[in-house]
Each structure stands twice: as C-alpha cells, then as structure tokens.
Length: 272
Image (tube, rainbow, N blue to C red; front, side, top):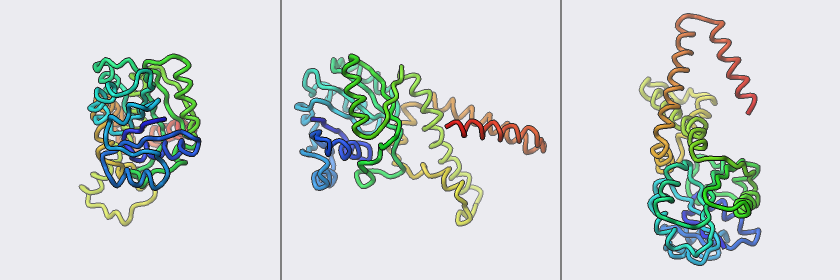
C-alpha cells in the first residue's frame, strides 16, 4: 500500500497508473473535493486529510510543493511505520534532503523526479498516461540496492524510464538549466511583451511555445525556484551572457558570428 501525500497532477497521475496494477492507494489531501474525486475516479482505496494515515503504508510518496514537503517531513517521518519506504517527487533535492537529515529519520529513502507533466494543475490535469515513456530521475538517498530496485520498479509500473543519478547537487545543477531557467525565461518573455506594448494577438507559435510554462502552478514553481535559487541565478547569469553575445552579433551586423551561434545551437538541440 502506498500513501500519496498531495493528490495534484503528479500524485494523482501516479495513483492512476499504479491503481490498475493492484497497488492499494491512500490519498492524503487537505481538500475535500480532491479526496472525493480521488475515490470517484477509482484512483484511491482510501482518502484522508491526516498525515497519520501514512502509518500503515508500505511506502509514502510526498507529492506536494517543495517547501510544503520540507515542512511536513518531520511529522511524516515520525508517523511512518519502521522500514516503510519514503519517496518524493520534489523538483529540487538539496533542500529536501537537508530537511530529511535534520529530522533524524531512519526510513529507507529514494528521491524521484519524473520529467513529465504539463502546465495544468491539480487532479483535474492528472492522467494515468502522464508518465508514459518519460524519463524519471532516481536518487538513492538512504536505501539498499534492493530497495532502490523496488523504487525503480514502481517508476516502470507508472510507465516511466528510471535514470539513476549520483547526487542531489548534480540534480539541482542540471535542473536549474533544463527546467528552472526555462520557467524564468517564460516569465521574462511575457513581461517584455507587456512592457513593450506588443499586440499578443499577433503572437506566433514560437512565442506561445516558449511561454507555455508561464501557465504552470505558481506555488509549485515559486517553491522550486526559491529552493534552488543560487543555481538558477547562476544559470540566468549564463543566459544573460549568451544574450549579450547574440546582441553583439546583431548590433555589429556580424553575420558569421550569428550563423555560428545558430548552427551550434541547432546541433545541441538536435542531440536531444
């Protein structure tokens, strides 16, 4: 049985993928309408608004915004049964792991980060196919090889592909560039459009695609930006430097420099 704390897009989608495979689910969420919908959709066997409901679970998954995750970790750790597996899907790892260590938990712990999802929020945007063929980062925190294997099996059961990573620092440095910076850029682009008085009815697909993540849940994004602020700020500095390089090519009319930058970028993107 897995207790999922937070039945938003991530938590509910994992439940929706796991439940048909015979895994019993306890949905823990403060919102009565979410608990009701979890039961009505058949994505949970039990719904509760109390963290004490984690006590009988074989595994507890934290699927709440990062700072909420940090805040509830001590109570969750003290409530879990001995030997139960702790999981999370936090978008930053360093701050969460620090909080876990400070609460003195002895539970086996594997931290996950599914690289999936969309700009939707809540159980209304959840889907049992959300993680299909998506990579999922797996960070063993305090777990034997067998336990990590169990966590990776859960990832596969949800339809995702586990990718093991070696440290929280490596994770947070990478996602600062690949996830957190694109959100920051989307916010900056929308603000540039507003400040310049641009008629957004003339916006093409490139602007819409580039700013899509600005529609994401504000609490979720705010939390992962603030808990990975130093790495994301460093990524923004590198972005500013690259924009300066591009600006210099444009203002000087340096066609060769501009072409090289564009060709380099095309090759990097093609490799994805």
